[in-house]
Length: 244
Image: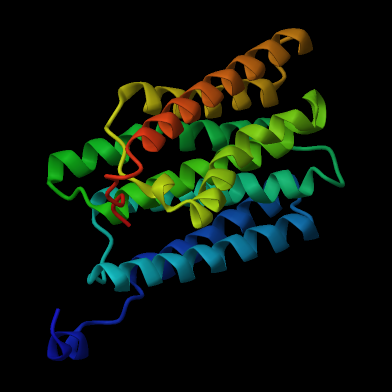
């Protein structure tokens, strides 16, 4: 994009600003239905603002000002995740509204594959879309792991923190930023984390079975990350950076 094109480009407010507005509508609805407390409002508000700022920055860096259809689906998922985060924050001081929380998280997980399908069918796949989708998934898993850790133990937090620890490690070991070969098993393991945490949060299983389910999910995550780290280590002298 040339300097003149940048000068006439319309403002970067369409998707992110609308998404933030919808987030506040959802928070208001949760406040009416379940009585969202101060912690929930603060968390939801912070989440909405940070998401808007980061997404606007990402759009500018990618040279566009509009969210395509696939990214709009991801933004809807991000809004649901904001609602889940608000409810989990409230659960620190008051009993969690598990039914509403599980419903929001389940819809967000169900839509996980939709944005990818929309991107492929509309020819709108992009590095921005893939990164946006991944960040929404990672944050949902982190929030759910915080909730489930309250009943199964703080070891569950490892599920939510795994990716963020990996990203932090890549700051000092750049070869961890290498582009990985596509693997269906990686996507399957990622999906399993959210499903296992939602099932555990719903309380539909005896605690021993919930413990086993989440433990198996963590084991699969360790295996998946471990395999990728080993692959990146063996290719550390020939690595190419993954798309930003």
